[in-house]
Image 1 (cartoon, rainbow, N blue to C red):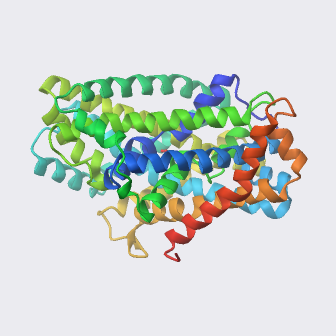
Image 2: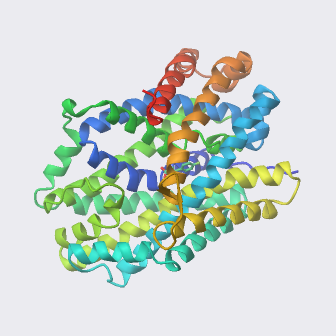
Image 3: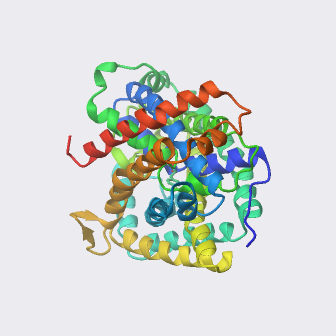
Length: 446
Ligand code: PFF
């Protein structure tokens, strides 16, 4: 069976960064930064990305590139049959994420059309009401969810090089330019400096335990760590790809985009005196108001439309990667065509997406006292992602043949051995211990 591969070095970086950059950067990062006090949170987040994120990414890359197969098979090739469970867990995690993530991505598409048609103009109460009515409607959000998953499907069936790589090579630069345009508009507003201070002048008295744990959780989600996504993409890397360097570049792109998203939102919000601490609804309730109040009408219109285009595109490059994890597994393990494998993944994601969408108010659907959407978010981000990454670090740091690991990380002895040693230390000790702490905290055990 012919496996795909990425065609160019830049394709590797852009496709993997396309997975990392998504709603996590433009929706989750700003609202958590807003809730957790700004710059101090960002400092902790940067440390988390450096000591936990990058080493964890490289660990997943090692499994994927060595295995050169879908996640369950790659894990079993590196660690033995029992380790395939970690790969299966990654596939399960990714299909759940694809289900609920597509619901929020669908909201972004609805908001894109609403802002294009000028339907988001109105006072704060109107915008709030608009969101509540839309998100609890039984049909509209559901249709957008399905449309988004089908769009993702259409890219994924085209394959690794012609689908994923090609789309990422176009969308990532577009996304960056759109983001820069809005950042410039936002930073030129009167009093925009307040937002810049909020983002860059840390007040370390605000660093509490929960800020530290939020930063670690955000780093997982944002870097697509712990879902076997990075492992699946690495199975398409060539032997020339430098794993440490690529992980550093991808983490840098992901972090720069998250900070730019902050620079897009906070100067505009603080310039009109709106506090950006409204939580997850920040981009659907607070921002439409900010855009209307901060900019003259025509500019406000364009900024609003561009913002939701940006969100939808960023979400698409991430849903593609979530979809690919299951597609690769079904297609290779069940010996069926890639098209059929993708279809199975799409049907599963739509089923989960429907439940998540309806649970937002249209139907009384709850698990453990949460809407299905919140439950899926909690289950994946707080439990399955940390577990996936923890076991990957244990496998690569302790269980796998060390020659195999050293060869992968140093590209068969051609790159720095000193860096390898630092990485090994982080993967063996620092990462598993930090992940265990996050995990235990999330479960309220510590
Ligand atoms: N990293 C993506 C984001 O920040 O939006 C979310 C994500 C993508 C999580 C792919 C998991 C995944 F496998």
